[in-house]
Image (cartoon, rainbow, N blue to C red; front, side, top):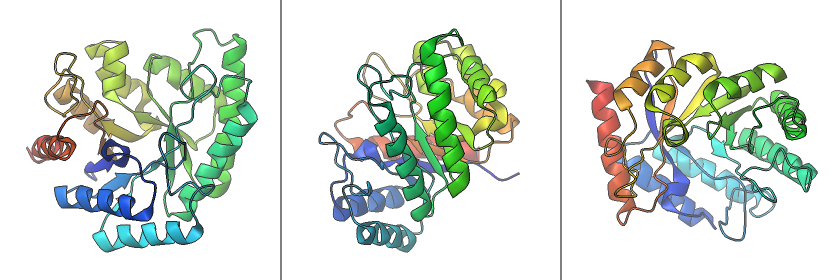
Length: 277
């Protein structure tokens, strides 16, 4: 069975307003030992991104791709996280929805241009009741994006968040598109659920999981170095192995360690030690 690999969610190291900053981040990840990176792919004033085709040029993207190849790393995926009027993602909100759908579809096309085949996002707040109008809006918008992903050969992966894994799985089943997958984040599920649910969710979602963030949670230190928080790593990683997951564990440290590179390095050492045990 193919083994899991270790990558880095590059926004952990900050925004990428130009190719040189993106190159420095990729160089850092490669030096630590990561075999892949997941860059941001949508631009905003607060978090500039050179890979967004509305901000950077085709030449910028070609250069970024060449730099990754020269470093011997791949793109495990890209993140196209948008913001609605009131929710993180906003694919269940009517206001501005068409723009967010089109922006996400453009990110899928850009991923294909960059040689990647996964785009992740938090789509919004999934209502518990499927008859809720917001559920139906999200169903329609995500289905349209997944259909587009199929046309360009890019998976659209919804990140686990506040909803239970079973609810996310049922939502994906409602759409029924094999190009719609899951980016599993055990830390998110632990914060909004339970340790048992974090592990059990792996088996519930099974082969829907195509990408994973490796992030920890320590409410006392407010740091997210893998192995130094509350995430049940043994149970989680064993569960991934049991379902035959052979994708990436993309280190994501989003709480602002003073020494972010050192924190990523410790996360990598922890994950590598577990995988090599």
